[in-house]
Length: 274
Image 1 (cartoon, rainbow, N blue to C red):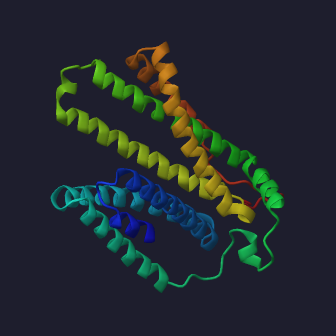
Image 2 (image 1 turned 135 degrees about the vertical axis):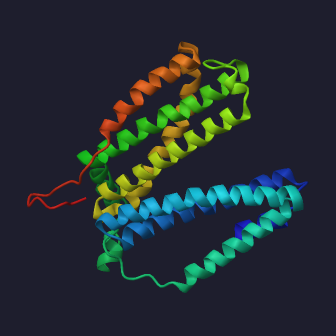
Image 3 (image 1 turned 30 degrees about the horizontal axis):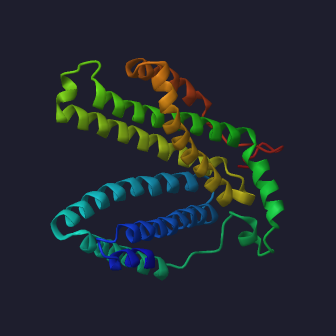
């Protein structure tokens, strides 16, 4: 909240200072996201984690849409400073709600919170995290999420090139604003649904001992996939034309979804352990 307030105090003409202020603000936003994810893992168990994850990220997408559109209108009519001030006020109101709610004792989550014992040493935590990440279901989920995110990230760049340089199938249709916006809306909805489903799966396959840390690491893998996909757009564009790239991706993407795990790890007794 202080980061957002600092942005509001920076003159709009100071572009460099605004950039640094936004960078600082985004660092705090990232830390907030990690903290919320960790809280959900620590406070919830079993299927509640998955349902909560879906609700959290569905709400996040809706909030991003409404906030972006709303603040965009405020910026256009009243200026950037007013829009940032409005954002700061909204965040302060949300913070007040958070401070007013007391959380119960951790249900599972990272063991230091659940048992009251001292937190494990960093190296021990890393070893535990690595063991959790390479469990069959967790590894399948990570690999599937990475591959499922790489292709759409690459194709989004290829699509921009296609729209700017030339039109493919139904070229006249792409001259219509409704067609372009319709495609963009459908693509965004599908990607959002896939992301929310993957978040829920990450919650489900996380090992209780390091669940919060493992979930955060899994999210980082998805972000890495987006970056790798954007980088691959260049080589893909050099090898095949955009229509061919989309046809190939359309055949591969459904097959990649078969990698997504459908169950939980089970211990010797047959009970779920992750």
